[in-house]
Length: 222
Length: 254
Image (cartoon, rainbow over the protein chains, first blue to last red):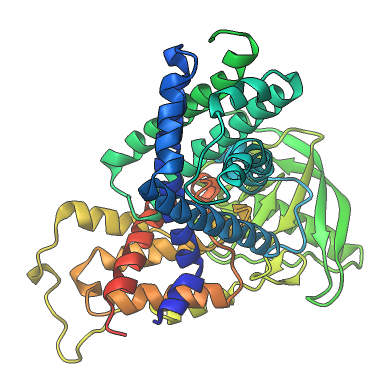
């Protein structure tokens, strides 16, 4: 079995989704943790220090390349799997079957696409203007806290961000436990733990991210 | 439970052969006993169709006691009907109310093409088994079955996986038409036992390759298969298969 055969098999494709998914889950912890510095309520001083470390230091910038590779692999493989799976039943059922599975488990492709659309907006709001200001090297950055304050003063942007976070939350509610099942966690003692951890993680991450634009819009922070 | 008779409308998928396009036909059936099995109700309907000079409905069945895996009807939006851990032949008419319209469809999957009406070609499952669902046995005298000690928990887990009757309800229920629950049951059943050890790595690699070749979709762990399985095969077998596949692909010699 060559590597090509492994990674083009149905299980191999799932493994790519799971490994990149777990990697992106780890990224979300870093992202949410760093952004939570806005609640230090110090006019963005602590947040900007953290953001500066991530943007002007060579190590996080190299890791950033890895993040994009992981993200693109997850998106491309995910879309290909979704399209491929849909082709496997050319004649559908007159009465649909929905037992035993949650709507968000069956809608990972749609939720993922919504997150992708949200990401385009999100990157063009923050990441792209900041990197463009740096000429895509390690130069001077923009004041990201001020940029957040400005961006989240517009109601429709806040609504889109909250909806984006909700899509992410439901994507994680299935994705978290599914990723671990895919890498082979089958022991009964871990199954319940995985589902609870996955649900807990998705609720906490959704709340943290959604509260950021809301905090700026409603003036809960300076 | 009290016995009663009912009149039903059976809306059933009719398709002449694998080439022609099919469609639904509705038939009234009268005086159906609540104690009949679903297949007996279809038998009654078929006798009625034959008397009327129509073509009877083709459907797969064999043992009619829930162990052969032949019956394969998708009834009112559920593979094998509404009862849990149950096959179509063991679904009894007391599951239905008088006057109800019952919709009966064949398994729907590209890898299970319709042969006629409610019969689908499930030989893809046979080819998956041929790809690795076997063990090597030395010729000569049969070995004493009790000579080889096997951990009780593993024996139980293996037996639970071996309960799979290969009916294909998991494929029918899965939104991706994936055969992973079937495949994982077959792989787990042998991987848990010492007898399965010699072909352990090649088995999982070859069987997954054959499953993909047959045109089944990839698993996304939704859990629909486990919910519909007449033998209650656990979805944990799929995670076990994933582990077997990961280890085999990393450590196989070629």
